[in-house]
Length: 317
Ligand SMILES: Cc1ncc(COP(=O)(O)O)c(C=O)c1O
Image 1: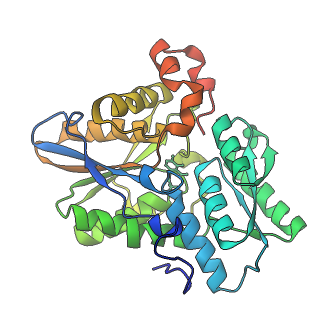
Image 2: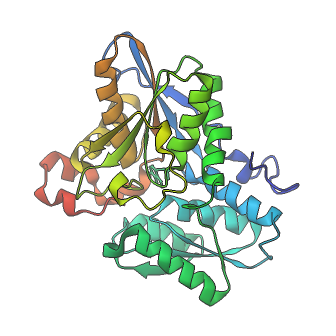
């Protein structure tokens, strides 16, 4: 358990509000009376995403290991949520942050990072996350910063095993299927392990973007560079989802269930609905990894409704 260092998290601080997110039944979206779909809604974390859990665990671990001095710079490559989470956690703990960000991320992400006083280092989107990670390593070395390394650090899995997965087991011991998007693989591996330890019959479904398409925070297995973290043994099935369908379902979640969830939540919901078709009865937990506010300035629902042929060109990182 990546317990924060003593005194690191005061009970009413923003850092103390991370985790213990709600499990919300999607009553209007569940397609059959016997099949219930529940969203683990990570949008209630302080910066609105599941990555608050990871950032807090990794920064606290660096502190415990004596790798951070007050005022030192933490460097990370991220397409959005981890960067924002790290910005919040690091500022709270007295560190500076430098983020390597691929060009083309939604403008709100860069604006939020600037609000937190993060130093932005842009890289070409063609290099993808792999290129951004390499750049972050070079930058950390050049500026004497400390790399966060969410793609390599096993704590990124453990934090989901001991918190996200544990919360699901406690809230819904009768869970049959778990569906989550795959980015670093931290969520699916950590939660998947915890659920399978609880009940080996739980089916774990990973969601990835369809070839040539980009969805915020998600990576195709073929392009996967997080192999050290991602344990394929926990995965029973993978589903590839398109950007247009994800955006349509992102809107449906708001219209029918009252939640403003992000694009990857739409993708995960598509997979959950497909799983529901295969069941007579059962409980599906689907991960809604972030809230959707930061995507709204791009008016994603307009693009999805028009079935815009350019949609796939949009970088839904
Ligand atoms: C919006 C969103 N959904 C899903 C994921 C995937 O999470 P993980 O990195 O734990 O695989 C991410 C990761 O950054 C994300 O930002």
